[in-house]
Length: 144
Image 1 (cartoon, rainbow, N blue to C red):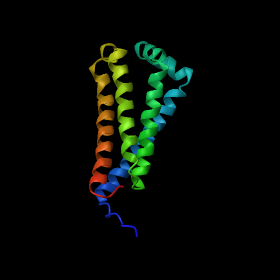
Image 2 (spheres, one colour):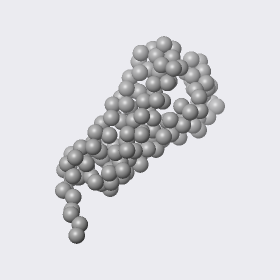
Image 3 (cartoon, rainbow, N blue to C red):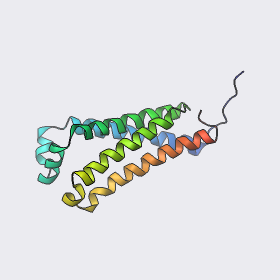
Image 4 (cartoon, helix red, strand yellow):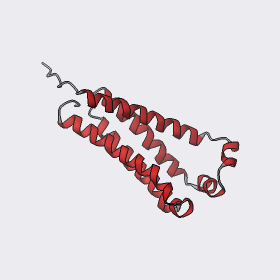
């Protein structure tokens, strides 16, 4: 005999839908990044282009892990699967490694200014929010 899970409230469903859209945007951004044309690269300011061209491969790998783990987590969350939680955790760690290295290890803040940290901070906050959403869903019995 199986026990049914409690119904998910509307706010949770909307948040999961938003998470799927956000993570799809992240996958698109990653794809755009790794398939960037020479023309687009040439149009970048010199400092930004230099950072793009010299970032280590493992940073790009962390980017891939971050976006694909988050997308998989969001989809699994929509299907009420508890594996969403570890995927969101992996994604959050990967994005923090990626953003941390670019901002501090490569000196993006020094080179591009403090404003270079705003969008990465938003990404980390939203990554933490998706992990919280998954944990909340498990705690309340909506996911599991």
